[in-house]
Image (tube, rainbow, N blue to C red):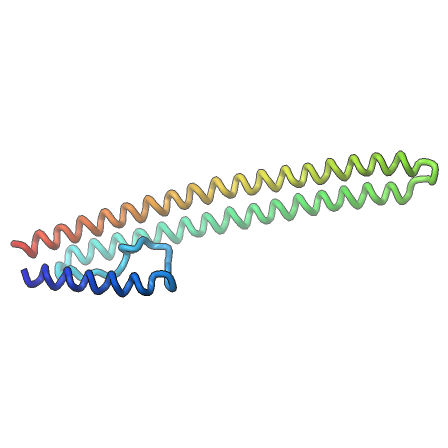
Length: 166
């Protein structure tokens, strides 16, 4: 009974300390992912293993999010460069046109510029959409990892409390 009481008090203390520092130091792991000493070596090992698995999965998903964001930014930059080149080419043709053909060349250039801007915007939207889908999937996987780790920690704590009650 003393072990159980000591574990509960230590857990309460650790929770209050974590709650005070959580906004300043957030690693992406679930709020239950703290060092927990149950007094039971097997349970402590299971908790540590669950925390380690969760941290690994969260890091993996954070990397996927970063990669998706970077890829979207690169695609958007490339689309903008392509549009800028088309716009510059269209404006150059207008500048080179004969004075009597200037109005006709200007109208063609406006159409080419509008098409180039539309294509760039469409590409940027698709890149953002694809990145957002990957980010949503990664965040869902992080949430699943946190839930699984919480389950494993709870099972280990329950086992430790059951053993302490014997």
